[in-house]
Amino acid sequence: MSEARHDRARLRPPAAARIGDRLEDVGSPALLVDLDSFEHNLKQMQGLADAGGVALRPHAKAHKSVAIARRQIAAGAGGICCQKLSEAYPFAAAGITDIHISNEFVGADKLAMAVELARHVDLSICVDDVRQVAAIASAAEAGAVRITVLPEVDVGHGRCGVNSPDALIRLVDTIGAASSLRFGGLQAYHGGAQHIPVWVQRRQAAQRAAEQVSGYVRHLGARGIACPVVTGGGTGTAEFDCQSGIYTEVQPGTYLFLDGHYGAGEWLGQFRPRHSLFLSATVMSTARPGVVVCDVGLKSVAVDSGLPRLWSRDSGGWLRYVAANDEHGVLEVLNADSQELLGNKLLLVPGHCDPTANLHSQFVCFREGHVVGLWEVDARGLSR
Image (cartoon, rainbow, N blue to C red):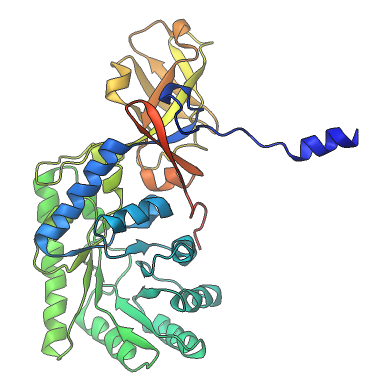
């Protein structure tokens, strides 16, 4: 009996995939990366930044993976962004030393994390209130560190950031008065512009944002304040931001994957991304006529930006994902005998890659139908 209990204590679920497995043998649900398309996207975005003379600071919130961040840096990126302080820890522990927290934070626990990170990496953070500045300055002084601070300016998104030159000057002056802080430049991100589907309209929104941030830079210059960095932009506007003459670095994240939401937009310029992120799914029930059920539901895919869709090369127009439950995905059968689909393997394109990656522990990487790499999602669940 004791031997049986000992055996039970060692029970672990088997791995979904191993190096060398055929793609059709990967357990589902699993998060898959087509490395050929991934590397195409990686090179294209780095090329855009290099051609525009701007730094590329990719957003790690899109993938939460040290293995991916290392590949971005090896391709030419200068550092990474994280959206939350706790999210930065795995990257810092892995030796990635240039990390920008592109988000405001408040609270003693967050201040303690910022100070700890600043002891190990070149940390920069965002603020949009002088009370944040005061708290950070006090914590940094007590912790004997110096932290780079970038005021965030609202350039159209209407979420965080100051929206007047006077408010910006108050922030810059408060930062400058604190010996434990240094003014690092401006954070200027227009999240809404990233998702405008029409390419010309997206370009116009990016141009308006660049004009607004240019005005802030001129206002600082008139006060004798140099602005060393203007950082922002994202996947949807990076090609415009790189050529704007005002941004010194850009922060795209989804460009590596091209999820379903971004994939529904127009890509008419220099950046032509490919879908590289997929979910493996298996048809697990055909009990209802005209409907099949797969094993990818809400615990495997985020649906805030729409339901996943079947990869066009895979579906042939014969299935449509129509509802997501906790463990189940319901698909309408359009042009097939539903009874014959039991056990079929499907590839799904998630609508939103960032929260989908956060639901998985590993990326299963493949080329030519075989698994060639397994990358951990190191910052999964780190949202403080």
